[in-house]
Length: 235
Image (cartoon, rainbow, N blue to C red; front, side, top):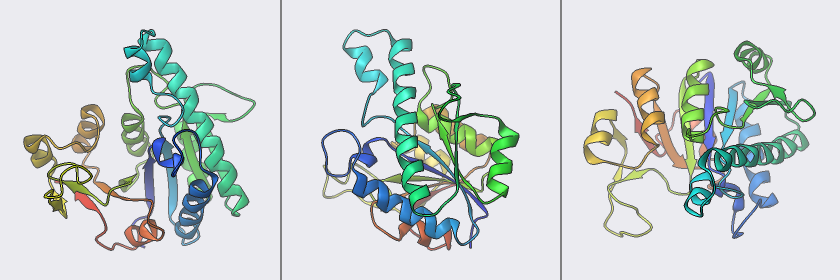
């Protein structure tokens, strides 16, 4: 396998599948199957999930809600998504641990870095819920931060497109895909990969990012094997 320890970032919207809102069990089960295949090969997998399929703090703020309150609601949404994926993984036969940046003792463990690393070393899939535990930070930033803390080899950002393009491929048919690109080129071209805080964290810590299509079964395994799937950001 090409990587020993992976941080997989999933958006909340990805869990909707073809639904307009909420969680699509079929999509979650597909993700669980793909993650199990990689974990069964001995790769240590940690996961961060967004909450946009349930609640988006920025959208709520635009509607007049206090930003801090809205962001905390978004963090709770990520825990709901994390619990759904945890359930699917365990039904698939994978041992998991859900660690939250906000204390919720009845449903998950508090995030402690050394504990998270120990779970990974024991072969458990670790899911990080509640973002960073602080308002004004996205789950992209949480993914970058947790990846650095656990010393992951790579951040894999699973999306519904198969990489980074010169423009939105769903809107511009002439958009060209990058197979590989540097952090500085992403800055210069103003490409939308992650929010700036998350992206800068990865650049400063020399942590590569791969953006790929998680909705295509088998892609996660191909990346774990080192196949050139998606777009690699490094250097």
